[in-house]
Length: 235
Image (tube, rainbow, N blue to C red; front, side, top):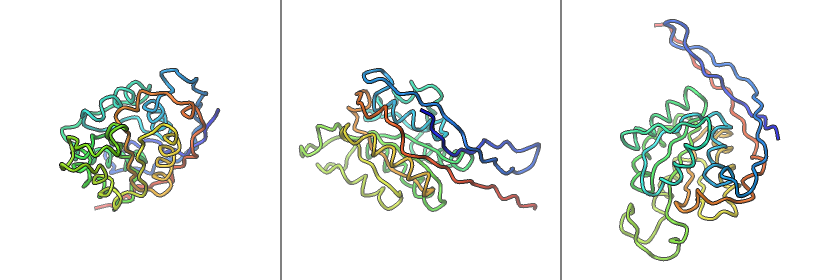
């Protein structure tokens, strides 16, 4: 399967110039069908492939117990590099700068304590119209609806506080806590971020990244990155 997407070439400033206009090209990415039950057919690798397909080669983040398995699968993907940061806010602003230079950025944090920490950077990206994919390692899917009080929360059996905070500063929110609709939620979130040039929120239950599913070999939701320009100002 050949997937055509829009992409932005990395632009290196010549000599001492402030910047230059990026060249926008259509890029063909060969995405062969992934056999079920292979290491590449897991939820984590599916998400990693989608990031690579839209032009993300570096993901910024902070490891935490809710996202460790997800990070293992992200860094297993060829062409995707994890950049560890001092804290979540740094990771968010690094992804912000990456999105300005490359057209789209991504960060990975852990549940609530990480999500609330990165929130200010996500809000800034929203105000600046930047496509930024914020990925959060969420609670175990078996903990939803159990009224358990988990660590990394505010001490209430309600896991939606982080989600409610992100609803006002992202254009789409995907809470992935089962495999049946994971493909659709992830692909829709990424394509919506690119289409609307705004951040999105994707929460992945911590017990799901290593599990395969037949839908992870499907064709992606169409992606497109609109041209972004650098305005040069002589001073």
